[in-house]
Length: 274
Length: 331
Image (cartoon, rainbow over all chains, first blue to last red; front, side, top):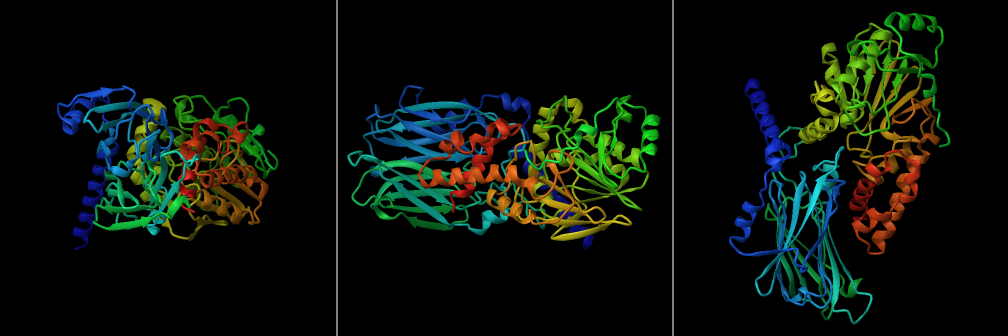
């Protein structure tokens, strides 16, 4: 009996180590391999992608100071007048390279600099890409190369108990523009969620904790869709999104978030940017 | 920095043979305090780290304020050992098997008593990667209950990064050695004639910090809950860390040993610079969150006036602000 138990424990420990290797082990040949052609084919097929054509820019740090929380900001300059169809964020070398795919709705807004920001995990030296699809169906890409910093930064939660304790707590904020004539508002959505990738270990059993992460985020302004987004565990613990949206009557945001366990979390902002 | 009791100036000195070292040790045996044990650099195998006896039977090695490199071999943290009537306890083992072995040689230069305990103050590589050098002593490896989870989850990444930064030579022999004894709250270890009180702490520098107090000399090893000179690095909770500092400052101990900094310091002032650094980040970040600023804005300005006060500021400060922002925006 006890022999069986110990064999089970060591088997699960071995599985955990193997899983960790899968995420963090970096064979140098693979690290140098250009995976973009494969990723492009898988996500966009044979469609033409215009690189660095001024439709979209990407702000990312040159060095990921904390590989678990790397801020990314995508900007669409005011010179772009087109409505937006979708935005795809890709980190070439992550275990799941597609970070998020955002589908914009009628309340996404227009008439100024539009932006979308989040925080991601970056597992290795990697290209990070923002691919914007405008209303006419053309694709535009901005790319940055981010290096993982040396030292002790880790993908893993700093305090797993604290992360789990507040699971599902949400903050939704709106920021009115400085000028009342500006047609774009800013919004922020935060949710307490470990966004665990299945590679963390249970402190008592040593077994991997099953993956549980946010997979869909729907944001509406005054009932109209701002965006609907599919996400993966490349988004950092406590997912955080900051974005522009079109000015409406009340500018109240309604947010619905679903995770891989099927749990639905909802929240809303107070009207008029309070 | 006020309040620093820096006694490192005693520990330089020319390399000595083992015989010379033993003669000096005998000559100084009646001196209870601050006995320098110089390293002797003859052959690498016989290499022993410099240690200083900061209190009777309490020895500390001071690491360099550097990132790990092929030159420093992973010797960038403080480590120590405490000698009882029956046994020895080692506190932290530095950042490679090689310097761990040199720390072990320093123990052996002082005493032949068995190394019964190897205690790790937290999971970071510069404090645990020398554990492998002590496996030959078959000690109990003792740590906070949460260390194993943290270290196992990060093991592959730690190994990968350290292999790259130390280079293949200094990386040789490094392996992950997990605790054999886990501390849940408090644990007392008897060394014969003196005992060590081990106390876990709420999440501060990491979620698996452990402090150790020697009953005979009232010396407290704080691990990386206390940084001096070397900029603090936040891998736990800024709020939690400030609360732990507030609590530990009240302790009445003869001296404390930081995880990075001089061999020994005095409470409460030892904590002042670190507390000021963390509190300034917290204040700046809270104001920026209130003003609707972003995490990128914060990493460009928050806490930067401390830049000239700390070594390795450019290597760790932005990461500290990033972690602080992600924590404090939930208030």
